[in-house]
Image (cartoon, rainbow over all chains, first blue to last red):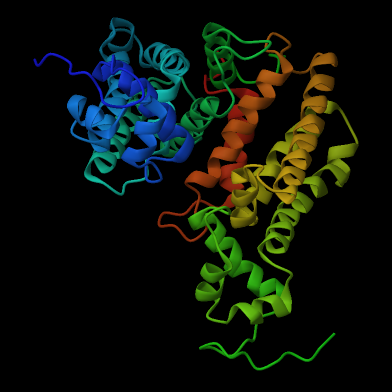
Length: 203
Length: 203
């Protein structure tokens, strides 16, 4: 590790790779990754481009770190005991609930992951990892259908897409500090109830 | 009406406002409305900019026509008899099913509507109309809860958002001519079943 140097920019460089990431992710989400230059990052962080290069090799490294954080959160779910042990339908319920919690807890990182388009190696890697996660959840749904616990009249791939569609859409409106704010727990409960029990009252 | 002039561009201008719209919407969806210039439209259509101005006043008129087509499709649902007559829960089911059908049937137009960001008057008008549609569906859900037909333990606004989240996400992956293609009807059935009955098999 090198000692942080005095930044020549308008603001003293007190960033760590971690805090710089917070700024970068906000800019990526606002302008799109493709539309963000090192100049934009430098302006948003209030430090010079060379100070940024002191921390990271460039914007692709920032992207990799950011989407890794989202992916680690998501894949971490699959390692949790309730996702590994028990009936498939219960494991699927756990994974659904935790996906909403990771999404709301790591909102800017997951938002970025969902918007990645595939123009660079890092983007393509992120998309491949995302697909791998989707496949693991689809496999769980398939197992739950084979157990006879979930309906098998909806094709697994279609059901998985609709499930992910509902969950991922939360990034479009959820704001942790929004007025009349909903706690992550409430959103997670609502998704699990809706997806597994449906909207109609049992007769 | 003036007689169509011979276009000076590389291709004879045989467009109507309607067929020009098809080209424009494809370009808007690919580049984003903000990122599309008259130059891009001219290249994609293979006719000169002045030929385009012969048909429409500019790109904002094309946007207005395109999102109008999506909005007319959506609001048209609410005028259909099964959306107006009967128990609220049945009307809501009808509206849900028809939303999926309009979305898959008018895919590029609804995709554009969902991506509009609010930088111009036309975009802001489209967003306001979209909100108005959302409110009408939310009112239907509220009425169905008041009738005791749908669960009232999920806040109406949250349930509406999750419902729209699932439906709107379909534009991200549905392709009418995709391999292993699903018919709009199958997707609509799956959404209605999932949203109203849920994934778990009735015990």
